[in-house]
Figure (cartoon, rainbow, N blue to C red):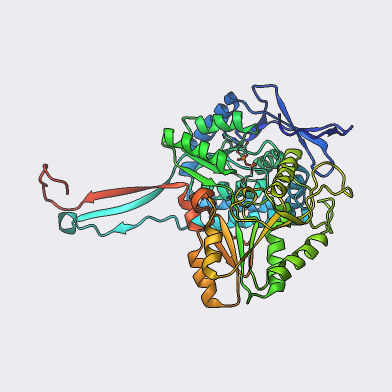
Length: 504
Ligand code: NAD
């Protein structure tokens, strides 16, 4: 069972099926998953709990679409389809954004523009379709009388598994490059947020020329539809976004089957604040990093490492900023922080706050469920002080609005503290010294470094983790490479018969 909403509204629940081969199809099983709103705990939709057999049907549809059509569709024609997908996101941004908010409680003021942002990913990868070139390599075999060139080919059927925190955007980071490269796709969305992907697939079938079977959605649990997809022998590439623990299991399955795999995993990201930084800017950046999206982003800046000269001032101002955050209905424009996405997520975050106190930390602000809000998923923005970098709450990903603030004395100490974690997804550096910014960016072990800003992404700039934060990159040219393989073709132009007993 998913984390079931505690209340059932009297209204009929919207019912969705699997989306396979261009149409809704019934599951071979009869279990359903209930989807609810974390704002008020009301259930509002159900989806099938996809079975192994359902995943098999979806993979076969994707294989057929790959071989029948999509692999051989001209790149410029694929680009046309990607533009059509982008237009669907723009046209239906209000509806899709609201579905996202009703599933996971993230602010509509963030989720609706996120649909327009996602559209740009399809447009960017549409442009990449037109430059899918190989290379001609001047090899010197046979005195140079050999033509060697490369072609880049799709991998085949992609199996993609995504989390609940930005469902359609994180799907897009995989689907846009995978389609551009000529692959077909089976998606297993999170059991907490399966509706937006199903509705998106329905809209694409109705309003674009994407061939049937090219994009299929099978909702279900991780142990079930998820493992059926990762174990399926006809899946040519696995792409996963989620926790490091599940990423490890998927990497192990992929390793056993020798299937290429991309992993976008968790983070415990530091904001490193030097005394010369513009503190107004710093405060904004820290709030943006940890309290936006209720801290439920992989790039959440959950550790603030602050130079001792400005530590007290930064903590005081952070407490004021946290106290001023407007909690409320995520559908309302004025709300600045909504609930956590579901009840178990609340329990996890609250559990970490309690653990922090047991470990000796002080809660400078927050940590409680506010009585002013409905439902059972709200937690106050929380600032922890008196923490050591080796405490569990400072080492483990909480995935909620909980910030640990730690002082440092020197640049070397700041870099050492920042890197003293198993994760390496992102980091912020705050200083007005250009030289220090470069030095520290150079010293940090993370896939993304922001200087004097935080939580910026673009379709054009590679994103991914160092260390336990992942394998591979999304966005940019690197993101496309994850969905292609390179073939090297050799053509003998000489009239020479070679020695059969030597390499060359
Ligand atoms: P999760 O790992 O619990 O689940 C992610 C997905 O994997 C879900 O669809 C789930 O059903 C599926 N799954 C679970 N067990 C599985 C299994 N054994 N085999 C196959 N699939 C399985 O993560 P979550 O709680 O949904 O999301 C939060 C996590 O995602 C955080 O760790 C966060 O940092 C990470 N995340 C990373 C990025 C990134 O780009 N690096 C972005 C967003 C979220």
